[in-house]
Amino acid sequence: MGPEPQETRSSARGGIGTALIALGANVPRPGRTLRETLEAALSDLAAGGAPVRAVSRFYRTPCFPAGAGPDYVNAAAVLEWDGPPRGLLDLLHAVERAHGRERVRRWGRRTLDLDLLALGDAVLPDRATFEAWRALPPVAQSEEAPGELILPHPRMHERAFVLVPLAEVAPGWVHPVLGADVAQLCRALPDDLRGEVVPL
Image (cartoon, rainbow, N blue to C red; front, side):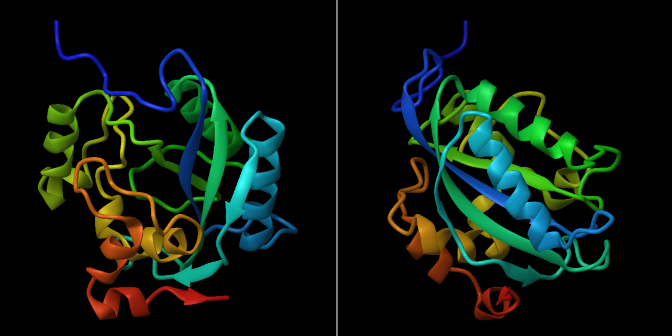
C-alpha cells in the first residue's frame, strides 16, 4: 500500500475547509460576457454547497499557451467546503458543464474553466505524486492529465494569471510543499508575466 493521503482541515471524512479556486473563460456564451459567465459560476458554486468567501477583481490575460485562442478573463476565489476533496472537484466540473464546457482538448478554448488550486494545506494524493507532476516537462504537460486529484495544483506557482488574482484574496496562504505564501510566490514571478495580467 502507498502512503496515506495527507489531508488536514478538509479531509476525506469532510469538515469545513478553505478552498482556493481559479476561474477563467475565453469563449463567450450567447448573450453573456465572459465576466458574466464567471459571476454566474460563482453563484452556482454557492448554490451547490460551496459558499464564496472572497472574490478577486476580474483580469484580462493572454491565452495560455500563447496563440491558442482569444484572451481570457480570469479571477480567483476563496470558497468554504464541508466535504471530501473529490466532491468539490465534482461540483466544479458540474458547474463547468452547466456553462457549456466540453473537455475535448487539453489547454483548449473554454466557455468556463474552474481549477481547484488548494484545499486547506492538503497534499494529495501524497507528496511523491505531487512532486512527480510538478516536475513534468513542459511538452508532457500539454499532453498528459492526471487521473486523480493532485493538490495543491502542480502548476499554480508558475502562473501569473493564477497568482495575481489569488494574491488579492489569499495572500497569506502558505504552499504546503514549497513553504512560501501566495504573496511571495507572486513576487517571485518575472515582471513581464505579472504585467500581462491586467484588471478589467
